[in-house]
Image 1 (tube, chains in turn cyan, yellow):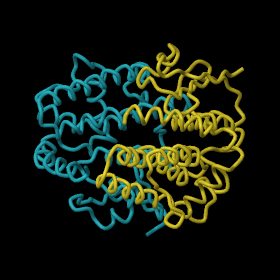
Image 2 (cartoon, chains in turn blue, purple):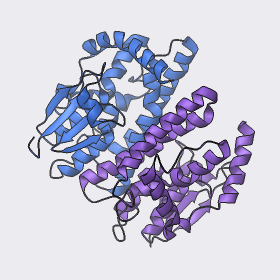
Image 3 (tube, helix red, strand yellow):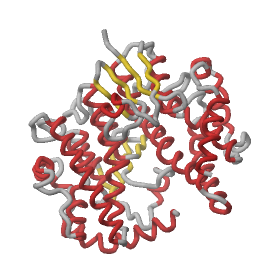
Image 4 (cartoon, each protein chain N blue to C red):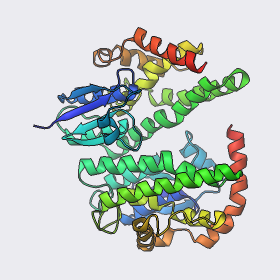
Length: 232
Length: 218
């Protein structure tokens, strides 16, 4: 393989893969998307990410990079001449990294849990936590955007990518639970941001179709539950 | 003059990471020991989301989460040794392994300590599988950062020092020299390097505080 060829082990359903795709699109990097079967996992995936066995995996020449946010930062630093993904000021960068970690460590696990929780009380509690998290993110949006369209300002940045990748799944979960998670009333700024983000040219072509994702989710919950049981 | 303040606790590896980074860069700072049973209003205001230490305050602006703080320090004070490598691929690897330590490995250790009997045996095997990855990563290297201590080494303080103490208290052996030779060698060099040694909290004091905690939770 040529030393600069870029490949991405991917799946249309994965929000983490979407992060990598958006970053590559922002930098206008040509890449080959290699769809991963996931159930079962391909040999290529197991070989290139033996630690986590997860996608996305970025293969850049002979370099292999795993973990979506690590990949996004790598893309930002390698293709440094393109539009910046992380903010340029170190303090703003720290804030962006802090909230991306919050999204992944504290907020998203609740979203994922919604797909497998069966009991009503637990479901209700989880829904509340998701909404509370979004209210917190709405405050963060006000501070980071400074009146502009995105967390990153005029253009999509790190935090936009970190949160925006989950939008399609969020909309599917709203259909499944019949509860508004990201609504105009409680989170008006994020509600608008979601529309702006989804229609950006670097995002829109790769954002999964919500009807298609909804259909997919029906079998997915079952598989997730089985996977979680096995892990315990 | 830039004002740097660190809210931390003496027994926390996360707090120590930040101190190590500040000392590596030769940055003068004011250290504030927090009482976690009676958190200061400064801490609660500076980290309202998690209410945890460490928090670095730079000219009054707070930064939380130890790894985020480490990157901030590296980017803000460019004189002095680098914490992260310069090359983007090496930086990606450093971030990957630090995250591995804090998320994957830490969770596996937690599971081991929280379980018993057969479940604990299984959990311990899982830890050892993960430690093998780290062991491989250290082949041909003195530190994760190469010739000198870097991001992953600093993040590895919990593994090198705290984990060993927990393990001893729980009566579990995780790291055997024959199975994890490079990791053992790293721990030896790391813990004995003057820079690390002079900043580690007193072992007896830590053991006493953990013993109290282990007894409380049973």
